[in-house]
Image 1 (cartoon, one colour):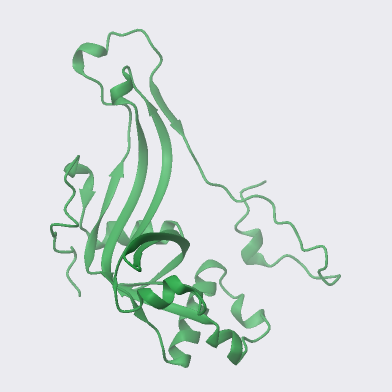
Image 2 (cartoon, one colour; image 1 turned 30 degrees about the vertical axis):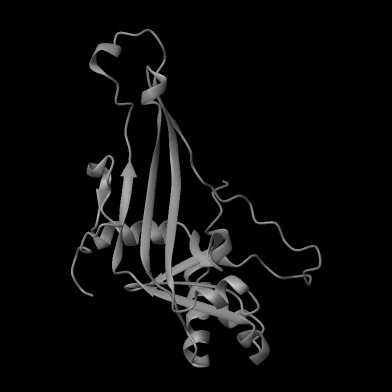
Length: 219
């Protein structure tokens, strides 16, 4: 699918605060790329199950992985799933309890999960996952064994149905409340990398890789 926007559907069209919603691919991709943590909802034996995992995007597909022994992953292959990514950017303090809110970025995607079965394609997807987080690390690692590859399930879903939803900015109060004497504003929330902590069993003389040093937000 090459259109710049996804076609809105009954599931993906925001019902409340619809002006915060977007079906633009660029908006959806930016949020997916901003946070690897996602939650995937399945039906397992007729009951809803939501699993946290890590996702990564390659083009117009989103991927996630887990243990081949996972009942959730086994039963979700070739079934309809819902994948969400959310980032909390701040608390919004207004002049009334009703108008308190949060600044956030979120994506909700719907589709059919497909297992990546071909061993070479699966290995390539896992390499892309690692390299997307730490460019240059994959080739420095002990090579993945055939058993490790078999023990890992990789699922994919085309980005064809879904939407982004974003709130930003100051409180939106009722006009008559702006004269109320209470502090209002935004308390920002930021996710930051700390200083890298080496494994206590690490071999001596190994320097911190540049891609790890570059991640640290500490001076």
